[in-house]
Length: 235
Image (cartoon, rainbow, N blue to C red):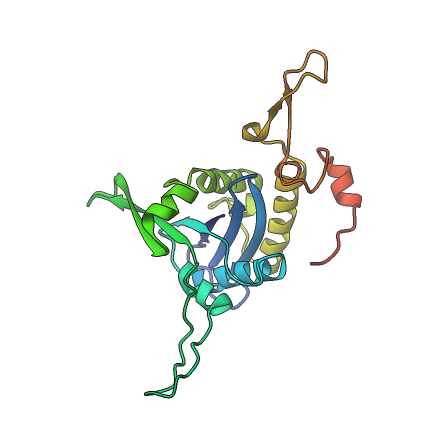
């Protein structure tokens, strides 16, 4: 899985619980590009906590999935908040009070490096949880899919485009647009990197697929009409 965060600012806009600066955190399954969870909160840690709480309900009850992200903060704290356990007291010294990670957690950070002028100079890989070699073998050392999802998100969602009339200033409206955007991304928009060669359709070399098709959640590309007229089950 890959976790990406987007910081949103509005110059001189008042900071309240429902307006001002928001952080969007999105978990992407790198095998099929499916956006599996999204949360929008006022800071990085709370947004990541929201994502892991969703994942805990949807199929990861015992621990966080193997995760790679950029140097964006708050993710390791969120993992501990949602999945961490306080060790049992063994009768010596003070009873433990802080949550600890499990030995099998896997989290790799790719931190971008910049020079004094702000120019990109390279990346540094940091194993936050787990062994660096094991993490690289499992997930590689790139967040390219996450960065591409970030770009796609800004192209789809006008509420994330700064210095425009559509820039979102209200938290609930922003959350609503993110839900619609993720549904369109997962079910309606075919991804070129997910296409498969086919010989079943005359004159066509490729079978296009959406992330939901790659994840075997549906067997066809949805239309916008189908998306708007289907009643989803809450989960």
